[in-house]
Amino acid sequence: MTTTRNATQIEAPADVPVIRLVREFDAPRERVFRAWVDPELFVRWVGPRSIDTTVDVWDARSGGEWRYTASRGTDFRMAFWGCFHQVREPERLVQTFTFEGEPDGVSLETMVFEELPDGRTRVVATSVVESFEIRDQIVASGMETGVVEGYEKLDELLAEDA
View 1 (tube, rainbow, N blue to C red):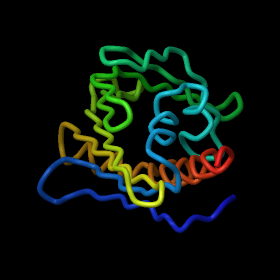
View 2: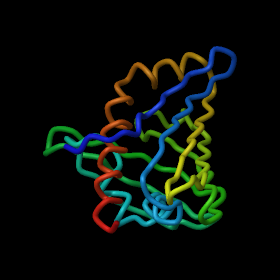
View 3: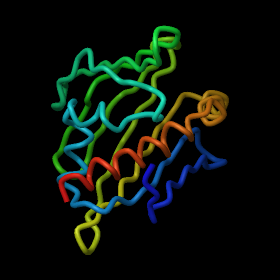
View 4: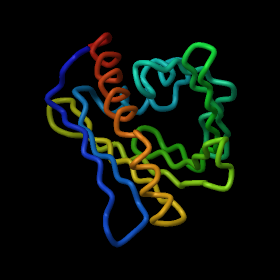
């Protein structure tokens, strides 16, 4: 596992049912953005280290759809799906996100890719959910492990081509 100087911030503001993730990466925003929209790259970094990800559908364009399955051996399998509302390379990605096990729980996610000095990038990901209860369940679900480990794997992926 690689350590990074870039800490992941996970925020759940008290006044809105939102989860905000803020993370900096030591790579240009074009490369970071590509890792979000290229399915071959996406599966290499998303989620915790103990999970394998398979893309079932991936059409990363405004109006396109996506679906992927996360699994651990034969005893654990979860699927997620949604649509790409807006893909504006390399600065903005807006999509819906649904856990197949809770099909009524749709969130709207916006990822903003900010160019920083020295070829670095800050990603601010904001997920809007239906209620504070759902937001708090997501935060308590262990999502922090998947987010932190996923971003560490993304650091490693980005360092391969540096």
